[in-house]
Amino acid sequence: MHEAIRWEGADDGALLLLDQTRLPGEEVWLRCTTVEDVWQAIKRLSVRGAPAIGVSAAYGVCLAARDGADAALAACDYLATSRPTAVNLFWALERMRLAILASRPGSQPLDSHLLCEAQAIHTEDAAQCAAIGRHGAEAIAPLLQGRSILTHCNTGALATGGDGTALAVMFALAAAGSDPHVFVDETRPLLQGARLTAWELMQRGVRCTLICDSMAAQVMREGRVGAVIVGADRIAANGDSANKIGTYALAIVANWHKVPFYVAAPATTFDMTLDSGDAIPIEERGAEEITEPFGKRTAPEGVPVYNPAFDVTPAELIAGIITERGVMAPGEVRERLGT
Ligand SMILES: CSC[C@H]1O[C@H](OP(=O)(O)O)[C@H](O)[C@@H]1O
Image (cartoon, rainbow, N blue to C red; front, side):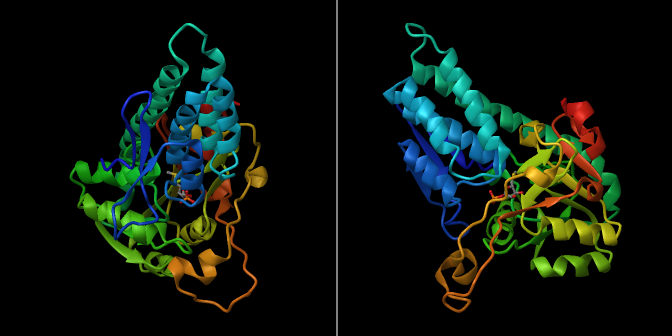
């Protein structure tokens, strides 16, 4: 497993993050010693991916706890302003807030107590990734019949505290000797597929072919795709799923071509307070990500830009949701995960 999040040292340690804005060309580790460092890393996608954002934020609260419980509680509120869509961020911060409130003066020092909680969140996510891989491989293998998997954005070890969500399924298939092939959407505008997923798959020896997002329909029309598997940032109680922009269009194309469309996510990505995806907050990001990607101007100065970072795929387009508790139909979410 290629870890992207590490805690260095003991209670007085630091959070190390593999800077995903520098990949695939450079492997540079950021050393975060303040909660502001972590907020910035999340905001600029140095660390990204719903579970990874939650794990990193939990460690960010630990950095603030050196200044006491009030500082740690303030850090929970501050980190919650970094990005709005991935519900794992808010789930992890709420868990840390409860841990702060549960700590008792005179018992285990606050920063030790919170570091244990953050490390538990990290370890649990890794176990959830492994289970998603197992359940997903079992469900997807029969569908492929020699055809490829197609995926969008990055859902691997870089996006989680473990081996990934959708990518964990591909890693599990490869480990079982299935020798899967993956079509990787480059995933405009920030190219998480080209820069990160292709890198992870090649690192692990999984066969892949990089395609432009606009080519997904063609490879499906050619009959080359047995299943689409993507991640999620927030799943509503009816199964509507928010994920990287372009996922909704991919789901429509997959359904048109009768290619089963799967979402892979841990239970921490479900927001059971939402009846549907209509209320999922969609992050809008800066125009420069489209007009000057990676510092090269590709559009006229001042051109109006719309840059939603996510879209919502309606439950009726989703064949199944792969979780650590098994694979479920969107209509089973309430029953399987509680209301
Ligand atoms: C395993 S969750 C990965 C999920 O997060 C990505 O968004 P971002 O790169 O903006 O953090 C994308 O939606 C992935 O599916």
